[in-house]
Length: 256
Image (tube, helix red, strand yellow):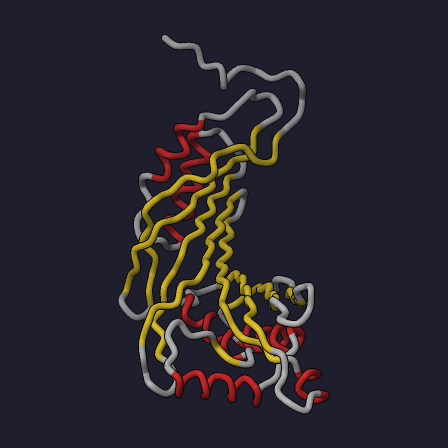
């Protein structure tokens, strides 16, 4: 029988907050409001808390637990965390799934349709209680109110990223979070635009100037009004077109 080196006693008396695996690519099925489900590929990280007297963890057991993952939902994620805790003799476990997610968007005038890719993240943890954070990064446009006010012609505008992270009592569709971010922006971002669309998007942004502070506050108002959401963090970061820096604003609500 081969020796279990990882299971040896460690005498240094130092517990480790997280020990595990990361950068594991894994096929994933997530819920999609339009079609029911969407198939994608996740970058997976898994970890457990390691007791002070255990030398190492058993890396293969992480992948064994992940094999039971079906369509992503809170119950299945919690079950995987419970299995991790049991197999790895841990008091706390963490599972993180980062993946691209695609939504269909129609151009505002021509109706030309194409897919917009989003960066999404599910982070589940369980010690005594289960927590699931859902995060999506939405590309938007911001147009500077100050630049519009002081300029004779035009105003500087740029692409920005609205990052919304929530914990909720009930399902909140990723598409709903996208809509919240876009409604707070000067204009949404579109994957395919014809000339009439470009004109409409440019003029819409000009009529809706937003600082990053404005955009993140508008997001916060909408998240706060949703009774399904018990905690949120929102960040808007603008890749400034005329400045040698980015601009950002962040807001976080304490869990009730």
